[in-house]
Image (tube, rainbow, N blue to C red; front, side):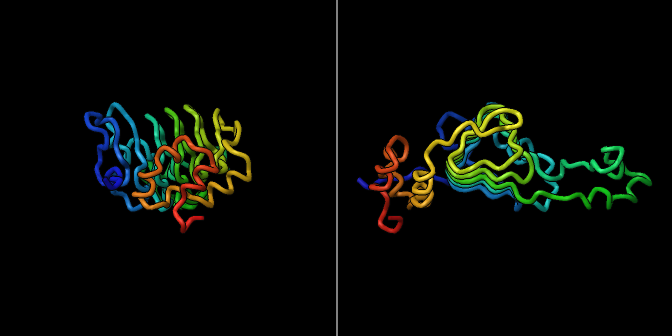
Length: 216
């Protein structure tokens, strides 16, 4: 029988588990891009991900999440709209309160931005992790539970703490380069299906041997 990939278009991929949602078919904001099979797990209301987990998203910065990412309960992305001025005596955002204060809206709209928040492919976020604006998280990274990510995370890095620090790399530099070259997340879905065991538990050598011809 031919290998049949999981359906990337359903919102709830796990029968009887409404707490798990695939994000790509769920999100509607043009400022949020999510790759296939990335999922969010929440026992409360995972379908509210856009409003409950992507915060202060007043634009125009984007949140980009790659394929095959796993987001634990309470993972939050703080977007650039959360910024306050810190170059004067007060950080209070007077103009958004209305009245004559609104005449000074340029003091809010002129704040510097850190750009898009970008998450690579195959990234695992532990429970309650928080990602600050403009951070870039590399492919294959792991973000520990409760981590507050304020700086970029390297490919296949493991970070934890507040502020998050690099604990270690999952692979040596040479193997990281090989993994990035293989980019298994871009393989055809049928090929991934045939080699799930290798992708989940094999060595880099095994993965290289399993790669389709175009990636060798």
